[in-house]
Length: 192
Image 1 (tube, rainbow, N blue to C red):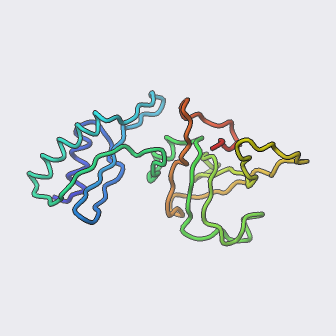
Image 2 (image 1 turned 135 degrees about the vertical axis):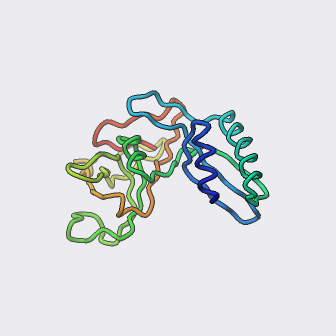
Image 3 (image 1 turned 120 degrees about the vertical axis):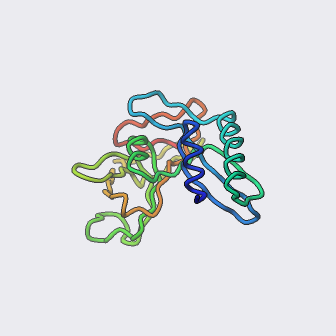
């Protein structure tokens, strides 16, 4: 049985979702888990006890299957959780997301976007028809303690549409807010 299959079965059997599995140099096996998401359900996050439970069960399963590793690390996806499936995008619709495209944006359809740009940060939303879109502004963030300048008009909001096939990588933008992650108002980027 393949390592991916063993990990998926073990993690799913305990009621969690396998986000990522990675083998590193030195025999480190890193497994990232999350709590399955149900539309309309409450948000619950992975805690230390969840990781401990999965670690114990995975150790037994890997030993039985004869998988060689020297150290096992089980963790939550963290603030910059990778987004890979359509379900991940549905779950985090409205959140601040970082995406990297496989190919640079073409100059013709991009408007004010540089023709060689591949990386974007903005609010994720479903595009009309099929696919997804990101809304952002290139207005620089004010530095803490700095007075905001008097601009005559704010930088315009920009939108880029994409499909999952066009993405090289997508992650939640790490937002550190000690009061909890809050959704931004539609069309407005969250402050970092």
